Length: 601
Image (cartoon, rainbow, N blue to C red; front, side, top):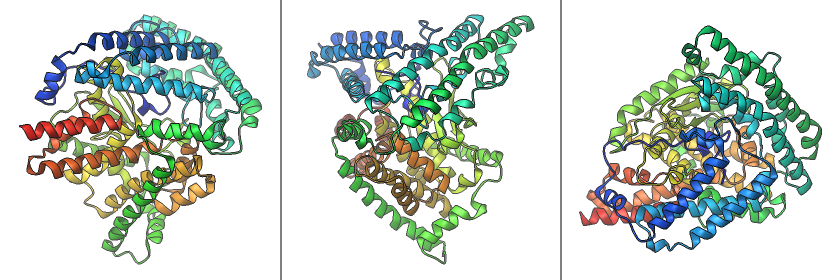
């Protein structure tokens, strides 16, 4: 199991052990937390063993959770270390399977389900050799490493000494990843060449002439120097600069040379996961992994087509409402090309985002009985990754309260950042979407730290997509263009079901995928290409969004129908979020239990 930060930060939850605001979700949950069952001691012991193993193996995880071990180290990413970890993971799974699920209390059953799925997923990742493709166009150690100063947030002299040690360790860390990619070339496990066309430029952005210009220097919190006298701070920055000069810059240069001379020439010309060794079985596994559902790629493909048909009808209704003189394709082209729909400056874009979120913050109590205490802020996507990444993403908060969560907005190429999607995008990435859900998860009591760390894509992204539509219930999308933007965002996620399965299982070409996205969404051409390349490099991940949202929406509709006037939306949302990120079948079980509790009251 590898819970380290990745370039797409939403796949990681940083843990904070804090008291739940406004009490426990409900009396049944409170009682369950207080009760124990015969098997609880065994599962607790196993969870502690796994957790201790993770903290030892992955020093950055220890940093995230405030554990003191390994603060001057990076994880061993050698092939031998990976083999050793998977052997330990298999042993943990055997120990887990020896515990009777029925012998556990309700909260420990949640821990059991999360641990089982996580252990099985890590074993499958190893068996399908995903560790031999450690980078793609959007994520990898080379992209995430410049965030190190923000993740560590060094404050003391010891913190900075640890920071320098990690900068020095980056040389071996890089070589270990290169060795894995060389093994990938030998095994036929390489990325498609098309998505790594800019990878050398991405890496060379960190090969700077002056270490003071490196992001590993400039990303250090400016307030840190105020903690030291001038002489000490000068010594600290000199040590950092020396480590960047001697370790980081040569490592990035070495990686760039490897990519250019060895890896890119060996990358495959095909784009689908099905072309990898055992590729069709691999993609079926990815489908289950990212949706947590027992569903086939063919079924997912058809669900996406049906959803797009429904969404298109709603889009047509808005076009008619606006009396646009032309059909839907012409209306979409109008939205893509009319300058009035796009910000003139980065500041304008950021201000529009801030206004939306300020309005949303004030309406949250209408939807939730419990709100997080951890704050969030807004930042621009870093320049070195902005051209290759999507419109926005969310970065979770630090565990010690030193940094809130951050909603990153891409201000690169403003002509591809439509203002009519600002409301839906912001509600997805911040509140009531990612920040609210992940901050609440960080504050959960009762669950083991491993469970609070869970990051099931279908739940996290499904909730965020569901949150976009929640905006209609708190006064958003009154502007028809914003509502069309919401529908376009939903069509984007429905199209992912079609395009991802098309590319990786049904033999679609890249151009076929681009044309489908162009025909079914109002995304700009730049975003369409960036998104398709994202799906190519991350098989199956795009399926989680819509499949998760469909499940949550269905559970709400069923609950409203069964409970009638007794249905309480705030209570429903609190129960959905009360166990953190969990597999969708477990969520359904918990909502069925919640409905029974409401009926008994």
